[in-house]
Amino acid sequence: MSANLRNICIIAHVDHGKTTLVDFLLKQAGTFQEHQAVDDRVMDSMDLERERGITILAKNTSVVVGNTKINIIDTPGHADFGGEVERIMGMSQGAILLVDAAEGPLPQTRFVLEKAIKQGLKIILCINKVDRPEVREGDRINEVINGAFDLFCDLGATEDQTDFPILYACGRQGWCTMDPAEIPALLEGKKGDLKPLFDLVLDYVNPPAVEDGPFRMLISNLDYSEWVGQMGVGRVYSGSVKKGDRLISKSVDASGKPVNRVFTVSKVLSFKGLRQVEVDELEAGDIGLLAGLDEVHIGDTIVANETQEALPRIIVESPTLGMIFSINTGPLSGQEGEAVQSRKLRDRLLRFCRYNVALRFEETAQPDQFRILGRGELQFAILIEQMRREGLEFMIGRPEVLFQKDENGQVLEPVERLVLDLPEQFSGEVTEMLQTRKGIMSSYENIGHGRIRLKFEIPTRGILGINSRFKTATRGEGIMSSEFIGYVPFKGELVHRINGALISDRDGETIPYALESIQERGQLFVDPGVKVYEGMIIGECAKDQDLNVNACREKKLTNHRASGSDGLVMLQGVRKMSLEQCIEWIEDDEWIEATPESIRLRKKILPQNLRNMKR
Image 1: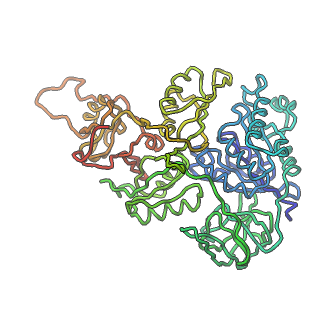
Image 2: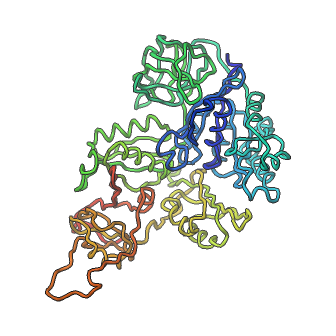
Image 3: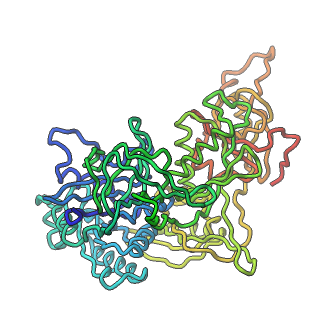
């Protein structure tokens, strides 16, 4: 059976075309009927994935080519979701590494390639987006191939791995070729397809290795069905399983002690295209789903008897950031969503951490506050947005960097490799901004068309809150990506935010007349007619200290006749703060209040007479 199986994953940096390529793999393999309407990026099934245009969760699908079933795993490309990539690598024997023909290898390319090389996967290099105008000039494709080869060598690839096959593709047009001389004809309209990729997977990637012995399966992902409940997704290492079999889940409890749970398989499913179909039997080498487990965690091993050893648990790199989640204690609590109690908030956060092994849960000294440890601000923003869409109200604090200590007691902090693509005229301003945050430039590269690529080594603290400022400095034309590279001695204090906050000094509703005078003191975050309360932040102060203001003050009526322009209020513009911008902006003494309808900023201490206004 395993000889007619191939398990591959598609890995790349964000926006290099993984999900689009999978769309055409499914279409050309006959997964959809001719008359069937199919959306673009069909693998991005979450609303948040479609809205943001990124892959957040790793997903399984399959195609059948001849007599061979190819299980395909689409993985996220953003560094914050690297844990998704790490935990599914063990299900694959091969990987298709997509690299943008114009951008070349970027930080996440390095990250995912390193994981694939360590797993010993057979890697196919696919140079995607060869239709981009900047690629057709000069020898850019060969430069990208040489950069990829250098990356293989730098990451310690074996001689067999560095002898990788190369494909040239245009994912959005659904064709690829192994002959670069064919590219001009294909770009001019010659009919092409993805058959060279299918053939290469069948010839180059090995069938999954299987072990002798009873059934054994490693859970690498989780799924849920309203009909059968919790399901574990993984690859079968040995034996086979049928509906009704009694199996044992080898897991660990919260303290890390081994726990065995006996259960009966209620359903056995396999992937067929985008569907999960019930099958009579799941055999060694295949990837499938088991239902009937009341409690299952990623990394558990499912075995047929207690004498079998558990497979090594899935281990991902340690988190570098932490964020406090708290129940909503604001005056407007419960008016726009469900003001959850601490128990329900704790249960929800624990459930999310079970599905995502890159996140960790910690208790705090406060019974109504919990700390989540993760990789980056975007990962936290996705968790917050998912909880908001479930109708929950809660508060979150500023992300905090997780420090370590060496054997001598010296404090160490995480450092990242930051890669920036931007127009050359903005390089001076961007370089100065990063150097004030302890960044050290390691590379300056001219990539053509008036654009440059800068590489910095910078503490994780220096990246927090920098994305929006970088976008502003480059007029929205810059691209930023980063990769965690290790820990270094603490580099000293950093200034996070120079400006103070404009804080409402009373409860009420914002009045245009009051906001007109307040806007002279700084930048407003709220429109007229918005409910505010004492301690709620309504804007950014122009000075370096907090300022209490009355946003509810109405104009006093008099007996004097007003002029024609009197009463006409002109607001200069309100900065609408997104969730990510709020996470970047807040300080340690501030909360973000998240509800299904609103994102508010507030001080942790609401009464103004108890707060220190100096920064």
